[in-house]
Length: 332
Image (tube, rainbow, N blue to C red; front, side):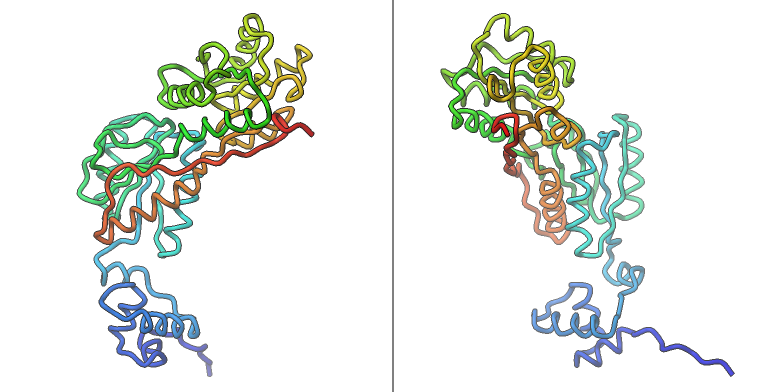
């Protein structure tokens, strides 16, 4: 004689406990149909009480959706796309949706292949992102798309970006609040959109406190070290250096220390990105601007869900950055 364990709860069990029909219970759990919020909540409480888990395949078949979202990126290193993906997953997982990551490696043919593949798999929508803030050409697919970090060149598309101008300005205002009056700026290549936007904001915000013109070079520690030599030859009296990235700022701090200039007592330094690998390993740790990429990912996913539901909000959505003060400006 064999004994059988208790059977798994079914949708009919949930319906009976909630006092509704099976079809109403299904609509409440799938968030479809025209139901009162009280009814939805009663059904959800019943499902939780019974330990009922909806079948994902049945859910997809009944709703005509796959409950899957694609994320296409050109950021092979994951430096920017991984935080965005983590934020997007926070939002999507609340709706029991999965995310499929596709790395194009900056190859247009590979991107086209992934787009065709995602559409054929009937994903509900696509997030497009990259490693630079330059606007990119839009993709042509018959499903909702939201662009994150790298906006679409089409103003009618839905793009989510961070406020780079505001971020750079916040670093300068922080330095000014500490009494710094001779501020230089060292940043990345003049061909990069982010470097130009941040530099222009520094010049505008610093005003008369700006020392010389922004110095453009590589996004590297080596360039940060070299830039210090260039600056101190012409502006030995400067008291602050804002940088367009944490990598550059770390190189700046290293070179100042080699030359016997104390950070921040002699010269305060700020970075940009709040990349912990650089910002926290710097000596001293960097005051920097956090891009809030996970929040950008969460907002992107929320806007995509709204578009999937038939309520798109096209145009450019700009999210604030956050200044993170540390020892490179505040001291110990």
